[in-house]
Amino acid sequence: MYPVLLDISQRKIILIGAGKIATRKVTSLLAGGGRYIQVIAPKATPEIKEFAQAGQLTYLSRGYQKGDLAGFDFVFICTDDPSVNLQVRNEVGSNQWVNDTTCKERSTFCSPGVVTTSEFTYTISSHVQDPRKTKAAKEELQAWLEGKQS
Image 1 (cartoon, rainbow, N blue to C red):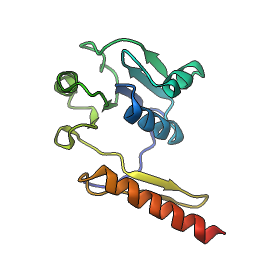
Image 2: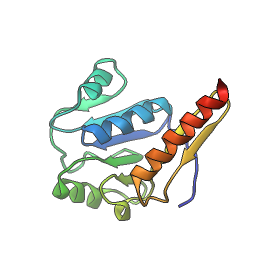
Image 3: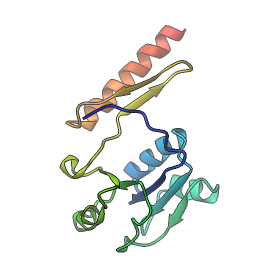
Image 4: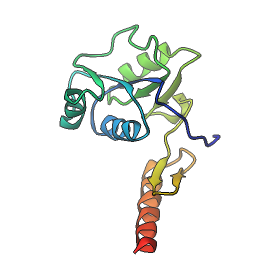
């Protein structure tokens, strides 16, 4: 993997699924400047519904349909249904970046843990091996940085 920070402010982003993982992704995408975000899922967390009501994203309350990925630059697969995940992955175009949160082998990129201060953005990854380790390292770095600021 090659680490990079991207300007996503002009990129179209779609998430299939609207549970806990999708909510974390949406929160970080919005914090990272995402402005063209669409979420598709039959059910959504209250946070995703709030983002939609605030006009920060478009939420379609339905299942994934063939053709939904057209025109999007980044695809996040965040469902707990393996058949839907595979259907979405099989429809990703060669010019689209995909993050299948259930299968790193079907992903063309991963989202690292991010800690932001007033001066720096730190990213942390376990080389896509163990998201729990990445989360723990992120929390440890965040605590250490907060201790340095006091």
